[in-house]
Image (cartoon, rainbow, N blue to C red; front, side):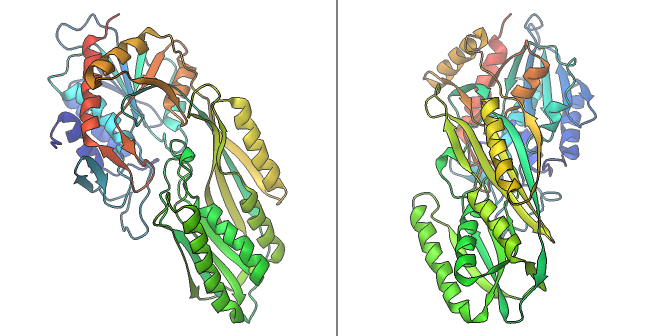
Length: 479
């Protein structure tokens, strides 16, 4: 398949520029330079987002202004053996038949394809369009910061096309809201017993994935699996926990987790056998979902201190009881998750362990209830609880004339009726809509699988069709 269109040119260029959340400056500079070469006006805000105003092509000045919107940042996830540095290295693109993926890292198709499509409408001479406003935001994957910082008086268009969803043949008109919950547990440490040895435990090989889009797939959470064994180990071998580390992104299902525990040297052989037995248990439970799951242990040098018995129990018990997964399915939309929570990160540093959750829900009251449950649980372990980063849901407007208009174009291009639905993930439409309450919004995109994980890949043919649909919308839109 050919990757030589304007969209693919821009995506390849963006893939050559490091752009994890919080480090998007060079990528935004690229966008600004593209706009400058096209003779378009740009406005950059203090948070780093950029708005491009694009004039209408010949004969299209009477059309309404359309807003194209996406985010420039990407989730930095890689396989353990990868030496990729997301702050300095280009993403290595690999074309594999019908798919494009990266070399053991996230691809950045989320949302690089959407941004590339928006830029292509500005630089592709074949595209006919009325006035455009192209809004490219920053830090969507971490805090929705770019959308939150958006001024309420810079956009003039009445229709916003968000280019940040990942299933061809669907038009999204609503999304879940979100809330971050963080717990900090302070520990007491004691000297490591002279007769004890230290064992390093590693769980890996999991799919991980987007904690909203993939949460209903039943994938294993590496932190939860590790905690199950730690609970057994503490009861069976009186093991003491030195530290635990799992997950790297607030909005990704953890793929890996490591822990250091101390045990009596006489128990080493039994301990190793127990790890093998748990690996078999985990493999059996997730046989059709996590075929590459691995659970290993090795003897390492002992640290000088370990968490004391109470601290070990408090942390393990809290993690064992912590919710993670689907909490409630939608009563209105078949197959749609209404409320979920992901235990996404745990990290021990010295005498403090930090635990992070991302709660998602289409219902504010249920979102608050799940957050309250986490707070209640971790308060029993004496943790300090912080909630932050809350963003609203996006309420659908199913009777919008623009939905019918876009749906008809999709049907003509794809040969079937598109599905009108909502998504259990956070879209910037929710925040932008709160600032522009009269703005009509919808979202669509190509097929992207396994975003937020090194398995991320995009179907090449669906990208080309996605761009064709976008161009048709811009060509045919009328007041």
